Length: 549
Image 1 (cartoon, helix red, strand yellow):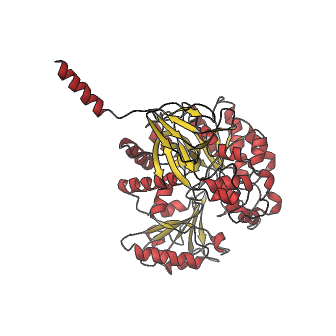
Image 2: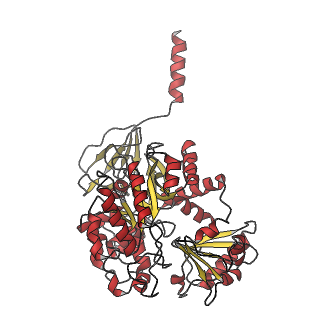
């Protein structure tokens, strides 16, 4: 009987997963401490739950652990968090046509032509990334021009900002678009000059006319795209992301990955509208799932479009398009109704607002609703790009979080100057002013609109200069943030913005051991060196999920 008991105990022990503390030694570590200041250390202990058990500072004794990993002198920083991205968009973008690197219409058409030839079996040619401003075109491209590249299959390509799409003739035919088609509320069908003939470009809500005709990805295709998105993000040192616009199909892809142990990215989800929010989560935000890897936090709302497509909602007309003040996408009454509906269920709203009128309405609505729903709500406004200076102080009230993307400032600089004129830029991308007024910043990339590379974001946030060092000294340099603030924006503050503080975002005892090993100190590197940072390893929950070697 005794031997039978010992055999059973041995079998159970062998079947159980190995659990042991791990010492990550020989690193130049840094994290954001409880006081918001940078703390440095030389080693990190991970417990058997994948959490930080101890950080070891210079001169302190290192504990004895079951395993030791040599960091080989690399710099260790907390896992980077993208506070505003579109996860499935990143994955699908990696599997479809990417035009973001094209610098002219002819170059884009050549790339479209080659992609179509290499993918003869695809019934539709889909992609994104075109930018008529970068092409120097001075206008939107046309269906006729797209037909010159591909005329035998429908083609639909989203603009770089996701707020306009470009279709060829067969795609418009498949969607039933004719001269008689009317622009929907909150959108615009672009027309050929002097006629009602659709030009092939669809702005904001008009995009749905085209999307309705495109075959939806199958579940296995979504799983493949999500797996690709995780790889892309981990390669850039990103361990967590706020997913803006999660649909039920996206959520199911995340859940399938979690169920089979393939979810390595932490996702703070914001549903694609209140109906999707309730469909996914029900009456309240979901619990944290899969060891703090997935939660439905709240709802994403759109108040306006983007500057590039002149859809951002402005108080005064565009300087380069008199009479056009943009496209308000949600009425003031509807916005307030949705905010109340979300607040009643403790869901966190994330309001897309780019133009001055959109930001004013978002700030005023929050001010009104906050009186009835006090407490720690963390109302989020996404982008906060162009704010009327008279409205800036409101960003320091009611616990509002300005969720901003530093690379937008460097990418949009000349376009913003053209759209607004030099006299209306006082409240543009006003990061430092927002902090000085008592607001909080969370930083992200808006990928796939921009590259998810957080080191480009850190460089832009601290210099207001692009990759070419332009403009010298920075654009409106008084709005730069310091390096500690920028790092916090991509780590601890991004976690706070998603109600994840204490779970991840800092390398402190009790938090998840999410970290990145890189080849240089981001607080000491020059801007060009910072942009060239190489991610050596990415770890999530004490588990290595990316290794450059």
